[in-house]
Image (cartoon, rainbow, N blue to C red; front, side, top):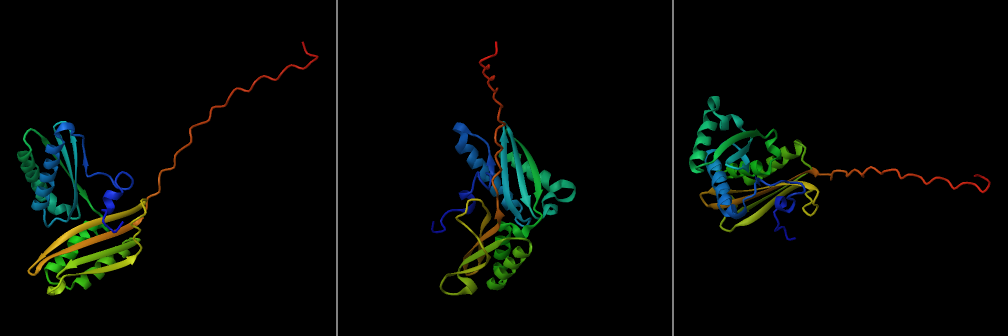
Length: 232
């Protein structure tokens, strides 16, 4: 496969679900760009809140937005003021639609690929050694129960003249196995000497397919025994 397929898209409908759940019909293009605007706005407004993903579900004129974050206190704000502010701003951008904002907490951010990549990117931006940041991230993920972790950092590492790629791996990451639950995240770290890309793969184990129950077998009526020759 050449590692060109996104591990999450490769497993859609089998291990991972869609982040947008709706049917648009002829309005598909308009609704798609609305989703992109919603995600871009939420990510911009909550840059320091540890946002992993934003799921969107539509029902008629109602839009349910679920924000998955490792810092729910920052997102909610004092007495829910920040949530109300973001909801009103989203409704202003989506005229005629009612927005319902839901905050979901991520219990173990060390096992979320997007958050791990953001953490490494922030450390690289603060001029922390990229090798130290990568080793620390791998160690924390394995301690939290990951079956395997793979990191890849590319760019002008350490301010070098030529760009290169460095990988760090522990455990196993079976990218070709469909039942493997692999989380994937990409983040770009903006530094004074250019942009550095951070990719993270986290293998959490296999998702066993649900056992299909066999339909109950109906007992067929047994044919009556044939009468004996002497019977009348």
